[in-house]
Image 1: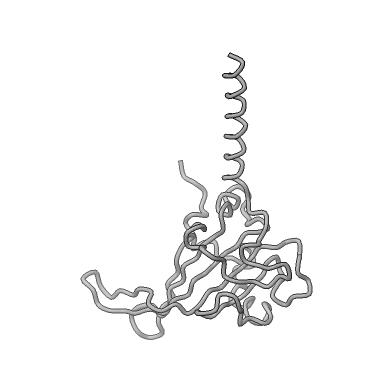
Image 2: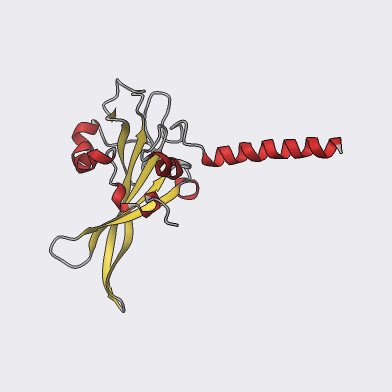
Length: 188
């Protein structure tokens, strides 16, 4: 009987730890940065991160899309956002940007992702961990990476290279959250 009680207590404790880990918010952004704050595209993000959603950027003057954007969030980020309405420190967002091909299909004119153009990576950092870097500020680390080089950003200053596109999303912590169904409150 004593062994059964001890085994049950251990089982409950381990179960609680596992549940806590699965609900935990991201605690570090080491998957996308080095100790100096240099950003890179995280390895295996397509397998390990949660898909947030996709955006189609319309072509100018012709049917179809000129780009497709696919966005992923690091583990725990979506659950934390649903609880608090904000991405916690350590959240990593990765946006893949593809050029497209558009063609008539039986369902109509259809665009699909064709050629990877690069990645845009954001890392949540409200503690201002990298004050000396021009790629960190306004609560995030920001960087663009051309396809073919996941480790070397072409961004030099987030204010000049990134913030302009994100200014309309300032009220939602610089992220266009309306495009991500997984961030919406669960309906019962």
